[in-house]
Amino acid sequence: MAWRLHLTNQAIQRLDILPNTQSLLAIWLRQDRVVYHDLASGVAVGEQTLEMFKAADRKSNTWHELLNELVVPNGVYLPVVDAGYAVIYLTDDGQMRLYDYGNGELALEIEGKEIPLDIDGQSPLAIALDRFLGLVAILDEDAKLRIFQQHISVGVFDFGLERDAYLRPTIAISRGGSVIFCSDGKRIAVTDSGGKLLKMLETHHTIGQIACSSSGRRVATSDPDTGVIRVYDGNDLAATHQRHAIDLMADARQVQLMAELPPAGVALRGLNIDDDGVIAFAMSGVVCVTDIHVMDELPRPQPLL
Figure 1 (cartoon, one colour):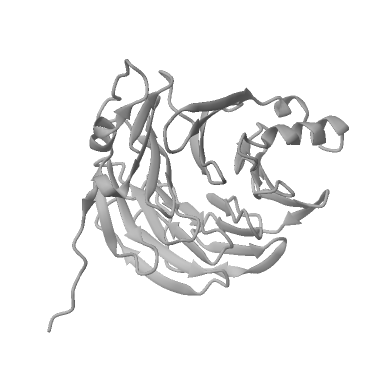
Figure 2: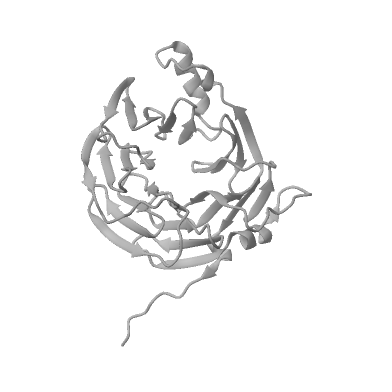
């Protein structure tokens, strides 16, 4: 199923795998411009330019009408929308929305009522919202993990993650919020929804992005120094597969008749992975969907007899 698509000469802003009866890939060309392609084939399914940026007053009828445009062609809501004045995180059904207004101001909207989330004046470095139950996970300025079950604080947890001026922390959460993966760029911490540390992995490489599948079964990371994508077992963080992103892209089928490969050294963006091992990523204006079966499988450590 591996395919690639050259969509623009500008950098792709974001990618989202959207599973349903038909699984789609949402490709953000601009802050307000998104196109949809079938995840398996790469065939174009639809596109839209969002109008919600023109309605900052969320109490107006116009705002609630514009929320309907966040439903994608396969029937689910977009997971994250940067509306300019706020970054909006949405559950699958769109009924719960987390607003990041910047400068540490966060609010969760439930049944039309906004409830502030108190993070002690900290500015979040990374945010993830469970799209099923509404669990919120935040890495704050001190690289501590803050967990909210909807608007109720579960706690603040220090796992020894460190903030680095050159590395941006990342966070990913499984569907239902049973496991949370967070990284400071040098290590990966795995916790449950109550903040209990399940596993800590010190890596020998830099972590640029982290993504997990919906069940948390698989975890993928990107390496900004070498361009390698690595996949881990979500249970024990054992490395299972790896390969250079540019090689994955070169081996993928071209959806267009004519298409160029991106420069080898360009940064990887929009990393996604699903439970079947399907991986989506972008380099410059080129999108690639591939899977772990075309990656190099790594030997599993075996106990000595």
